[in-house]
Image (cartoon, rainbow, N blue to C red; front, side, top):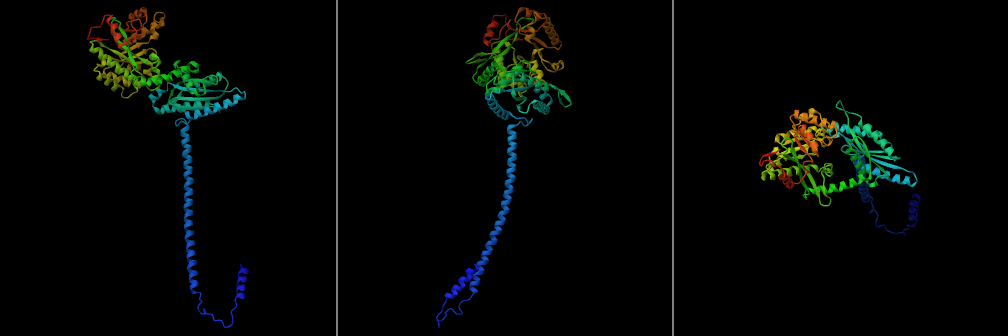
Length: 527
């Protein structure tokens, strides 16, 4: 640059030649003051602009740093929130076990691994076990939800300890668990695992200083030997209910017939939801015979489902289904209302007839159940004494507090109360004395053996004597022969019911049947 400047300067000087006598018209006219001012102002403006720009840039850098820190913190919070959402989406909040979504995802991956292994001629199986706790609800209702949550967490821990590294234990709601076993060889492995679970869950739980014991029912399905891949959980559920129907505290392997029943139940469950609206239910009435007068003393209302395609369906085929899917309360409310309507219709014809209806434990847990019964009685202008509510002994003892609360309310309303299937449960006399029941009903399992087994006669005789000592009436159901009826009458049983006397029939058929017998006096109460 220096050489260039010098070169230009001296080149210019050499090129500048002025003739002699030339006059410089700009003499004394050129000065540096204006130029200096211009340069100074321009330089100052440039420096000020540079200062302003640097200041703005510095502030922008501070803002950018703050934004960067904020973005980093926000990203960290979003990551934590995302992890928490994933945790909540795929795990059970109470026990920390995988939930149904994560279980099904792991089941899907296990099926893919099994297929790849079997393609390599490695015989590998997986098993799905459906575990349901027996006796959990009474403990939960008696000791509170805190105690119930403690049992669920403890049960989850025990099941998790039994699971292998590749196994999955999940809680899918309530007191129901699923376990996925990978690398299973045969049914013997499944049975071994199920027995370990039965023993582990059968150990006492320490609750509020007390040792409480429950059991469990387990359904097992082995794949690919049993069940289709997309029905493993439902098949295990069907097997679990088979184990529960067998008495609980045991396991059952899935069989193809269970799958057929499960599919049928799903179809019935869908139809059951519409049956009430479509008027497909009907009450049939089975007479009860007074042990002294030999006249009809009342009837028991038994619901029948007139399915449009399947025809008449017995209660044993859909009552349990209605309880499982939460439909029993609506059905039970309809039964009570229809029974009251029929009582009113008979009274209008001059016949006063008491009607017994069966209650579900689900109805007893409804806070306004007593109010709804009273509303049905008022709606049809029926005396409360003509409605008899029955509940089985086992259900009454399963949820004793709810039973006692509801029975007390019904007794205050004047409704007649009865304990059904007496002798088949595990109730204590102290509990029985606390219920305002006025009648007990001897189960048909005792009645059918009266003629052949001495112990059955002893049990029935003891029940009748005990009930009379407590001031309770006694009804024997399932009487099918004259000999059974004669034995019960000699034992002073108050009422008898069964096919020997009459089968359940429609209201109109009942009137026809009644006309063939010696009728109770018109206008008097048939009890």
